[in-house]
Length: 150
Image 1: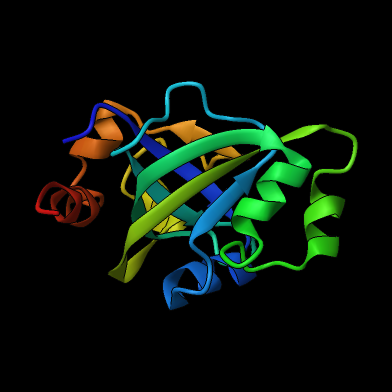
Image 2: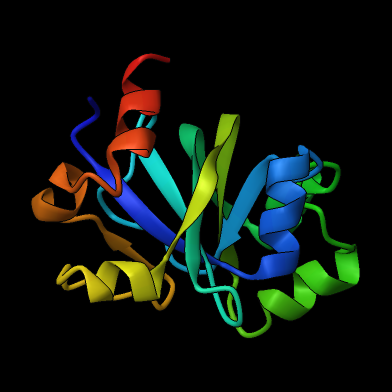
């Protein structure tokens, strides 16, 4: 398996677009330092859903000026140009995490389920690296095994 696995918080409307296939790049204001091509990104859908619903495999990461980034993502980001510039307001460069392999869990992993089972799961605020204990958990087994066979 890849050396890194990241939990990425995604708003419900954007997670839906990822799983539908209309969103093929995740935009971020800050680049996760250790992320690289081939890494596993687990999609944590933020409130009110609060579940891990699937994952994608990183194809490419770019950090560009906003004008350059928009030219690369305008048809892949699932947002309008106005939303793009509002999201990046106050900064000069943005990050795009491109992906083409996406899969969803048959049954999303609810945060309450993890906590009820004694797994000290802390949802990511923006992103965070998955711990070895989380990756070894049977709750994450479907995501990890799906990733390993790709």
